[in-house]
Image (cartoon, protein in one colour):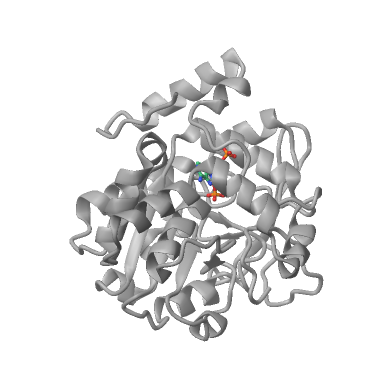
Length: 325
Ligand code: A3P
């Protein structure tokens, strides 16, 4: 799927002989896996190294991850790293405006995960990539200090709701189960990109241990609380000197309401194909509510108690706290 900007899903390629279909094959290969939830709905995924990757990650996953390691990084490259539904498009849009100096809506990022490196190599600068991979899976040069990384995290209850509803709006999703089934998969880490907790610990551990100064750690809820402060912080981090007027304009253009309106009114004819392809109502299913606390409209009391128990156990050693409302 060369040039795919969107996080979308595809049916399994038939005759993909280079992929392993059984547990007995060498572990350098991913396996096609179909995990069933309690209602019999399947998660279709490429499982590699114990982790569930989206079906559109190229080839056998292993080769793609290996190739990414040696990708040539440019000084003005920006990498937006997130667990799905944590605000990837939001941060991408702000970073793109800051990098280009134009407060223009740019659509969706090119994902490292879904595009061949040869294709990414040819994109013009400044490049702002999206990725749901972990910090260690980024190109080696990034971990040597080249380029800039914006890592964003978001409270796991709102992510769960956003993730499930996003899946249900895709034409050919990797999973199309009920909320109940999804939540179970999600808490067990059997969803694409694994568990929210693993992704959060990647964010937290990188923050605690990585010595480089080319990573900025963001929280969705903080951005909701004061977007201008975060836009200013991002501009300084990216080394983009922009005047106050421009930073205020970016902030205004990147509120949920403005972005939602822009997406609905400024979609270029050339984008229609992507949108038609990936969503069943021809609308980009990324911009939904953009709120903190919408999970309350979806979790039952029992589901909330169940999730809280897991959350408390898994997060007992972390000092980081999330705002849930
Ligand atoms: P909701 O489904 O809760 O509305 P991602 O880009 O990682 O897929 O994340 C999508 C989520 O970010 C969606 O959450 C979307 O509405 C939210 N989002 C996108 N732009 C936003 C903005 N400008 N402000 C707040 N939330 C935004």
